[in-house]
Length: 313
Image (tube, rainbow, N blue to C red; front, side, top):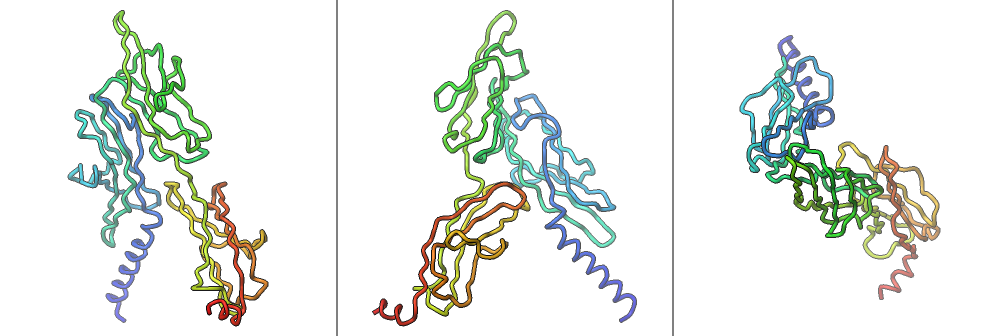
């Protein structure tokens, strides 16, 4: 192999290595540098794009609204400032990075979208991104255009008054499913020796479980036969909007753990014996979080071939 061929292989392997790593490391993240996610007409909000990972060359950034590019050129500036003029500027904003290296072009994974709403009224109820998770906390803020001194703020949920006072924030702790509903606020303030009062538009708050209750099931077709494989599966859904979270699965029989936790949602017993009959459950844990859920209890009976044949006829 000559020197030119060796160099080409080196370049290809380097680019391939970067391409494989970009799914893991070079993922863009969009956040708010200044301002609020709900802005009144005439206000500004500045978004910042960040891409974890150490590389010698600088990133150039692209910005998108609802998936369409909003900046026609790649900029070294990692921020984008939106001046709110029209409600149609509301939408989902995202970013991604691109880099020209000695080995070709490198593109980051696009960021998750960030919702920005342009408000035309006087009062807005600001809420965290939806949905919220059970047992988490959340703060709702009643904000008035130009931020005047508020003399009274009233918070409502589904038409019922929750809090009355001069504080513009409502704190919700240890969220439960019953905390779901339509929230709004009414603010009162003074302006040039007169009193003004206005109400926000209702915001629908949704609360979900970060981890659904697991369901354990037998994947065998028909009865579990003596000497045949027994295959169990643990079905669960994670609802936490955070990349990189991993699930660990435990299987139990009659309350006793069967082996160590693994990343597999199935358990296979190659040759089932009569002792493998019992009540099976699975437990799921989110790695790095104190969040676990235990499944239902599933009775499993291992039968001899002759017994199963009798039952079938």
